[in-house]
Image (tube, rainbow, N blue to C red; front, side, top):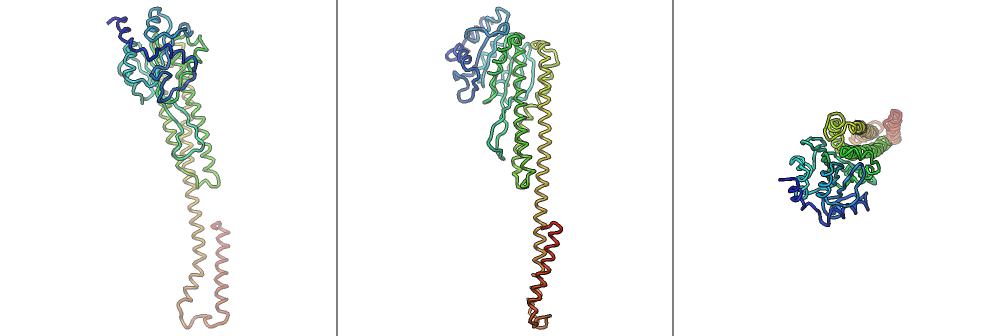
Length: 375
């Protein structure tokens, strides 16, 4: 089937109300962050569809099919299509229009993918894990600290398709930043891919800085005077959330290295230098996470040591008091046997003497335990 036939076939891709309204609404509220149940301003998966030529956003709100026709006819510029959690049915026409590989389409629709970069012919497919720090008034054993999402990016010679999953990670700021730097945007779809990668990694760094504040608070509580009573569940919760952050950050190292070093047709060598900078920032985030993990292990071990010391302290006190109580218990046990012939049994001062000797023995034991630090 000819290209014109394919374009007619996907004419059904035009969303409710038309993509013209989407573009107008996106310009009016460029920083809108989409979340369920309204995934986009028009209630469909399409967030925005914009054509760029020479780094400049083209006026008008053409629908997707018309925009692609004009770009390919002029052999200049590219189309940036933004989607939020599309269904298979919504994505089917897009996949056919841009000749996307079925495996990549399946990954983009169903999400829950590991960060990666794959090449399918002339198309590059990249997966990024997004992270967001969840604000909380007080860290508890059940607090959610890190929320994750995903951004899938299809990059071709004349198009960029971004598919976002999750409640955060809006690409509005990325689009605004690129439009404010037309010389960078003029470098083509690869510039958009770099901007997204840079944005995602910057969020990693912001999230690690916020997590560090929680770790510092836990560390302060553990080493306080009442540290033995601190809730160890908070430490375990931080370790679990840190593991979630690690799963997003560490696997991305290899894909970014591929984008920075290996020759890729749709990535200009000039853009690869920018990916090397992203790789450096990603390495910093990964090192911070590894350091946090080690620090949390040390904090947990310190807390367990404090609990052990506190328990030993309690046992020493109990032992000391038991030793002092044993003296009058022994004396009472001896005189409670009711023998007729016992020392001082019929002596007037026998009872006061025994009580005085017993109290003196207990006082000597008490002073000895205080001196040794048991009491």
